[in-house]
Image 1 (tube, one colour):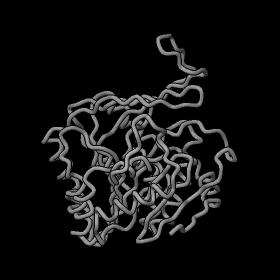
Image 2: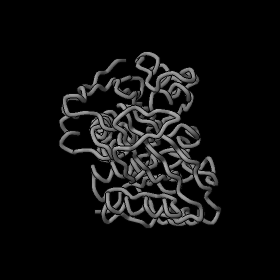
Image 3: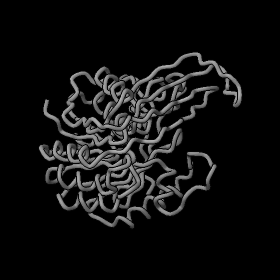
Length: 334
C-alpha cells in the first residue's frame, strides 16, 4: 500500500513509565511496582496511532540519536513492523528521555531538554522529504533546538500535493502554516487542547489552574477568535480536546460538541499520557479518507479515549475504540 501521509515528529523522546502502588512521598525513597520504556514524543505517538488505525498508510519523519534514540527506534520497529525509515535522520545529539510517574491515580510527566539538530542533519531531512509528494501531512509537537520556527510551513509547501490535507497539532507558527497550505491549494485543520486554544486566542487560563477548561462557550469564543486571526479560506477547521470533558470543533461558522461515553464502562484509566497524540494520529488518517473534519475527529477522540485504558502511550484496543465511537454524540451548538 502506498504511503498517503507523512507525520512530522521532530521532537522525539524515549518514554519511560514508572508506576507506584502508593502516592509519591517527596524527599523519601519511593519503590516502584513496575517500570518500562517505549515510544515517546507527540509526533511518534500520533504516528503509531495512525499506523495502528490504518497500517502502511503513513510514514514518520524524525530525528533520533544516542542510546535513547536507538531504544526509541527499536520500540518503533516493534510497534510498527515494516516501518518506512527513509525519513529517520540520526543525530549526534542524544534523544531526550521523558519519564511518566504514575501513582495514586495521578500521572506526572518529567521532560528532559531536547538535543540540538545540526544544519547538516536538517538538510538531510529536507533532502529526504524533497523526494516525496503526499496528499496528507501531520505536524505534531514542538521543534527541537536547531530547527527553524517556519519548518512546518516550509515542509507543507514543499511536500503536500495540490489540494492536500494538512493537520497541525501545535500552536506555534499557525499563520505561516495556513499560508503555506493556501499556497498549494491545501486545507488545514488545527488540533489543540482547550488550554492551548485559550492561550493562542489571547484568553489564557491562570497559571496553576486545572489543565481542562470545561467551559464550552469560552472555548467556542477562543476558536472563533483564532479563526479570525488566521483568516484564510485554507482553514478547514479547529478541533480541540478537553481531557475527560467533551471535545469541540469549529468548521465554518458552526460549532460542534463531541461527547463520548464514560470510560468507566470500558475499564479503569491506566494512563492518559499520549491520548492527545492518539487523537491527532487517528483523526489524521480518518480525515485522509473523507472530507468531514468533525467525523474524523469523532473517530480520533474515540481512539484517544481508548488509549487511556492502556498503560503504554498511543496504544489502544481497536474494538474498544469502535465501541466508544459508536456511542459518541456529536451536537451542533451553533
